[in-house]
Image (cartoon, rainbow, N blue to C red):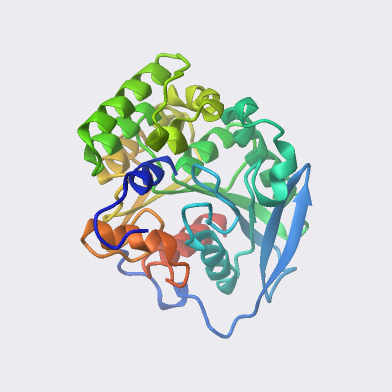
Length: 326
């Protein structure tokens, strides 16, 4: 990542790819032992993060990753955050076991994809349903809460149609169709105007169901030929109607310094589900880390896995699961 002006490649890759009044015991305890165990099922590979009290029956969490080639820990070719690993450790430290898995085609789940052009959004939903059912089948699990980050929030909403859940935690989830979000992100990104025009033209074409042949090299990470069928499969989905159709408990958690999903997406989902619990962490960004106000400093957090989660992220999730899941 450049230390000055954001490069074209990383600007495109970024697009492609304060809680108060909490009880004191919502913070993770350093004295709790957390263990991790490998997990695999139906071609998916992941990790179970278990508290020392594993075996005592209670709610568990399934962590669903965001867009792009993101693995179970929240890392990929252009990002290194460990955000999901840190989230899982924090949950386990508070007595909540969790499962996180590599997306199909990534890491230990690579065998589920032979050709990228064959992947569709419904495949990701099916994987989340499979993982949720497997987690629910464990003797110590009384209910499953799905924690969906970014596009994983939309996956979680769809999965909730097919499997009984204790609740949904939507972290920086989109509140508009993907095409609208991409247009807004490309308009805001520091990139040459000609490239911006190409990006908007391609987005419009994909939203109309078209395949686009002429993709500038700088836009290939987001719009390469092999990923276009997937993009077309998800662009028409509206998170507002998806969430409004669900009746289970929902926590909406957003960072006020998110460069990718602004707070108007939060507000759109609040209008869809006025009964949802809403938390805005004033210093957090899209990858759930504490971020400075300047854009370059914010983006640097995407490649520094040594950074902890923003301290406002974990407590509301723990509290939501404890109060809803019992």
